[in-house]
Amino acid sequence: MRRALRDESGMTVIELMIGTMIGLIVIGAAYTILVAATPLSARTQDRVDAYQRGRLAMDVMASELRSQVCLPNTAGNIIPPIIPTSSTANEVWFYSNTGDINAVTQKRRIYLSGNAIKEDVWQGSGTLASPTFALNPTSTRTLISPVGLVSGVPLFSYYGFDGNLPAAVNQLLSAPVSAADSQRVVQVNVSFIARPTKATAASPRDTTFQESVFFRTADPTDPAKGPKCD
Image 1: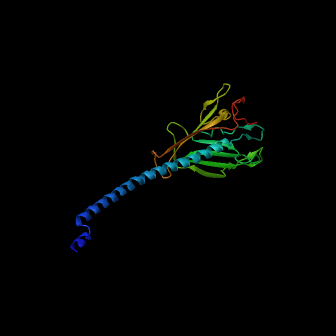
Image 2: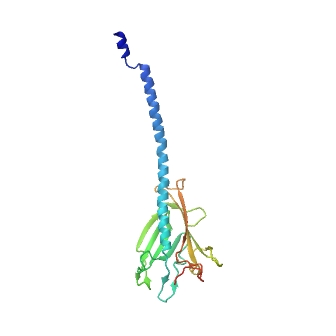
Image 3: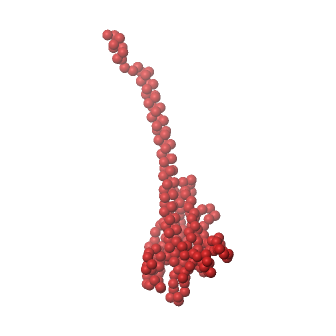
């Protein structure tokens, strides 16, 4: 009987202390892993956030720049898509048509405003042959915020064909774009840094975007070496 009772006895105090210590070590290790993983997850999410919003903004800007059209005026002359003087390193003004062939031309401005890239749109009214635009934009929206600029690279760079045949798009045009050069612009390079939504300064979580937008109406055999407007 004594032997049976001895076999059914519980843990000793020493065994209980050892088990408790092992349990605390396991819990401590799990907590350490959790603490280390939390900021890593936040950093990963920030990178994904910056990339997704930057990619969307770049796609929108590229799509709208490719929708550029020449503008007819009342005198019967053709006005090139890029609006001169106003188009600079930090903003681009241009005429576009994102609707069908019967839609009236729009005027657009994509620009850097503080730490954001924004867009103003003027919806043209009147006829296709002679559209008019109100003084104030029809709509304004923020394409992406916050953003930064790539060191030494402007938000917008303008290029035209060189003087050789076959022509190559390698002639960097001065900004702001002059009236003469506005007829030669066939490519706009867009460069910016997308930052996480709550970022206040540059960090390793930023994502750099740089893309060359080639105008769909550009024709290297055109004598004017610019958008094919007729």
